[in-house]
Image 1 (cartoon, one colour):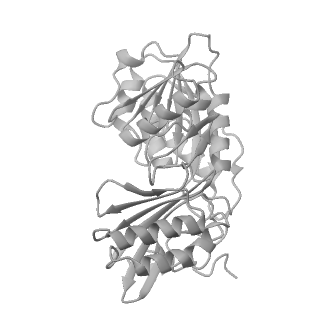
Image 2: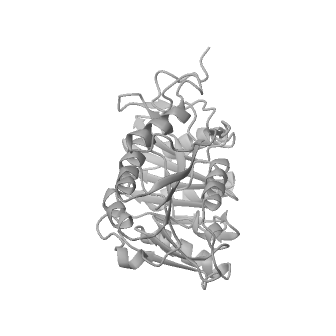
Image 3: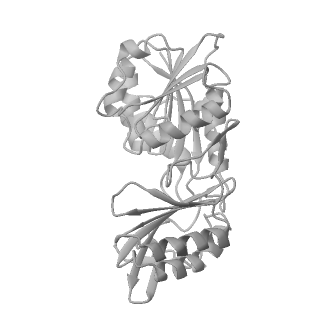
Length: 355
């Protein structure tokens, strides 16, 4: 019997057994390809199923029929989600009333998406649909938020920027002691458990730091690692999305950390940090997007910074970027694989490099 009634149809899971893919060996192979065949790799940390707190659902309408779920494997049709062992159990009871809401909206004609981030105080929802939201739509969305405990519901038409329709209470995610209000649909680590494992591995990889030590953090998002890092040193954090920078800055002020952390908006793919801007850092920490940070890595490699901690969810990108560091004379001090994505081929990894 399969682990899910949708397996083999839905594109969410690649395998039917959680250990069918050897993720320890996957990280080992990625580092070997990069030129580190003897890298010290810790045992795999396994994140439990039923803990995923973020989901990006596709939605389609055919008359009065609403499908809300993930796309079919190798297809564009939507599998109407009835179960998912990966998600936190609070998600599934929310889906039937969401279908009813979508059916009632004039802004939903044929296709859209529903992003749900389950924060510390409830589901933060972004509806991205294919027509303009009219006043009756907005009233129905407000009623839905009040009835189903959503702290905030935001809307967007097509590729427009999201706009909050209702904020019942500020949506909050606590990161390293700071209360962050993430942007609508903003990136979160897939689970709180996975996030904790990543942070622990990053902090364990830090070098000895003085009171005046400086950490440069790249691709910092809304501060997932910035706030924990700030308990060890001063942090200069760089992120490409202004909404995430704004959220992190507000949280830092609220936590009294403005003197410990600075956040700056910077597109690190188009305008990477230069070696002179990183040269005096005690450590560089980066968590780039899925495709990696090829351009930025070239400047990190020539910066002279002795310790680099790289967080990745894509072994292929990790391998390519790690090769750049190997050519610059870095070795691997530690590598920690974290299975934050059960039933898939993806592996979260934290790798500590030393020049």
